[in-house]
Structure formats: C-alpha cells, structure tokens
Length: 207
Image (cartoon, rainbow, N blue to C red; front, side, top):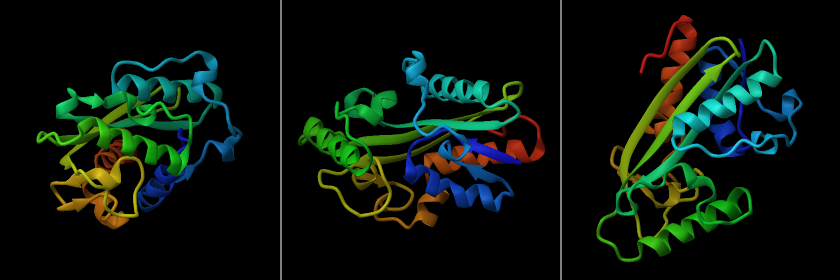
C-alpha cells in the first residue's frame, strides 16, 4: 500500500520514511504526487483548536483531491506548562516568522527562550495526533512524551523545538539523541506506530 504524507516538513518526511518502510508501506511526498506547493490554507482552511482537528482537516483536504489514495497527516506541537499549554497548535508559526526550515526553527526557539526567561517552571510535553483517511475510512492515533525546556539549546539533530526539549525518557535533548533513540520515545513515533498497527490489521486505531 502506498501512502501520501501530507507535510512540507523535510525533517518529518525523513524521520518517518524508515518507520513506514519497515512496516511494509511506501511513503510518498506531496511533491511526488503533484502537490508542489498547494496547501489547505489556499482553500480557506483556518487553524482549528486542537491537534486532532488540524490533522483531520488536512488529511481530508488532500484525500478529496487524491482519489483512491491513502493520506496520512499529523499535527504536532509543544505544550509548555508555564505558558498554559502554549504554543500548542500554534507551535509552527508561534514566533510570527514567515521563514521556513532551519530559519523558522531558530526563530521559534529564540522566542520560546525569551518568553520563558528565567522561569523555574519549565515542564513541557510534545503531543502528536495522526489522522489517516482514503476519503471513506478514517483512523486516528495520539502520542505524547514529557520533558522540560532548557535555558540554552543543545544538539545539532532533530528539528523544531528539539534543541530545547530535554526528554525525560532519554535524559538528553531530542536534538542530542540519535534518530533511532528519538523515534523510540517521541510523540510522533508513538502516534505513527499506533497508526501503522491499525493500517496493518485494516481495523481501527490501537490507541
């Protein structure tokens, strides 16, 4: 079965490709199926209140334009207790930067560091919700991992807020962890493994 991953994030595509391949699924990018730059936002889709609503809206939008194709989408973000769960669903553009890739990550990390300042409350969690649909059937799964936000970034790997996110499970930042170690405990790894199990059995989500 071929599956289209509805993301423009090269780091996310790279991170998930091996997981899908090991489970027996071929993972296609949006560009490989003809969506070079078209996104739901161009069709008037606005951000919703929860990770699940965002993931479902994006998966359904692409599935409606790719008949007989399985589309999987996730919405992931960082929830910081001192920020009352923020940036949450706004994680990607929280800093207000219009950049992309590494420049956007740097802007978001700098903003998070500045907003938290010297706050002693730095507990946080990464959350991911995955939705998969072929336009008729639909599954969802959730993953979550806990940690805290460092005052100074550490590590060269990962993407997003990884250099600031100290993982309770790994005892290092996600940016310092190997891709394999991160994948074993990450919010996204948990959610996608549950989704892959659901697809493998052609049943419902195992979460």
